[in-house]
Image (cartoon, rainbow, N blue to C red):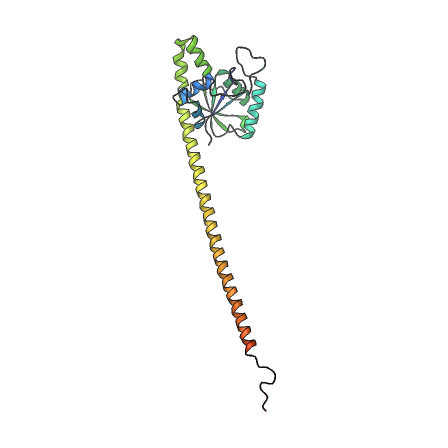
Length: 238
């Protein structure tokens, strides 16, 4: 089972070429709630996979960011074909992302309570998908600047990200252990094969040595027989 997938809108206007740039404010807020330190954005990938519905900011976007639904649906189609949405928790960041995803998946809207909800989507061949909806980190940043009185409820929901990250860490750790176990098993198989090959090589060397000794012994016998062979006239009596 892969780590939870967090889906946002598009790259930060400060870093339009890179989704979830480590210096982007939204990425730092994710790290603050997931890891416990806004400076530790490098650790996010230890328990989460991050992506956006739009790999680039829509051309018509100005100060207010939005999701290009056509691009998003095509992207989600690709993810579904790749199996990227199966057997994992999918975290929808913000109302617009949740709305676009629900429309594409043809499912009932997911409540924005930070809890996990199971939906069955015809887009995924009727498979169940586990979804969580929390505010987009840019909303946390906005409320901190302009509406601190409304911040508490948004942050309370956003705090579920800590548990989501720990779940992802546990999954990643289990996967690393499994990979290590497979590598160890492979090393054991390789070592066993090498031992058999060495044993076979030694056996072959012994057989070759025996064969050489047999050939030498045969040659010695041949020489002795030739040396002691009677010469014409030796047995004639005078």
